[in-house]
View 1 (cartoon, rainbow, N blue to C red):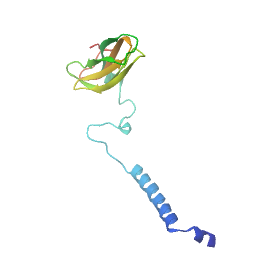
View 2 (view 1 turned 180 degrees about the horizontal axis):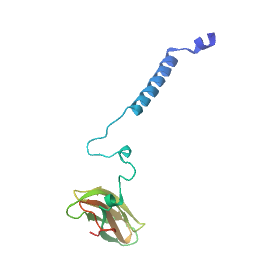
View 3 (view 1 turned 90 degrees about the vertical axis):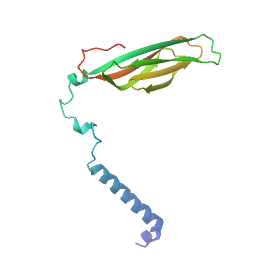
View 4 (view 1 turned 180 degrees about the vertical axis):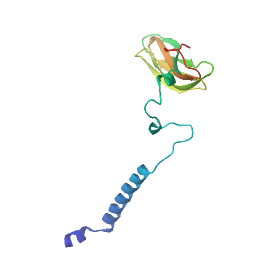
Length: 150
């Protein structure tokens, strides 16, 4: 018992107490039921067969391309361009992204607009490079299977 008292300092007691409170607080936060913001979906709210292929058929993929040319060899001055994929009228942008087809070029930025997705790419000594922007749009009506072109 004397050995335990020798190591029983204020710092050890405070650290142990803080650890117990942190663990108890974390488990309490996990155990409490949190509500999702209005008009949002959580994984618990999706039950089997709630999301069907018909729901997903409203998603369409739209492409936009742009190209640029920067002659070889690299000279320290990069050239670039912006590709934009615009959602059709009556649909809503969900997400997007893109790529560039040249290993000598790189994406400078990729961001959403009001109803479109833009991808900016540049390169030095790339020769011909093509940027492809992709937008995933949610239409109001179900589309035929496949991808929309824009």
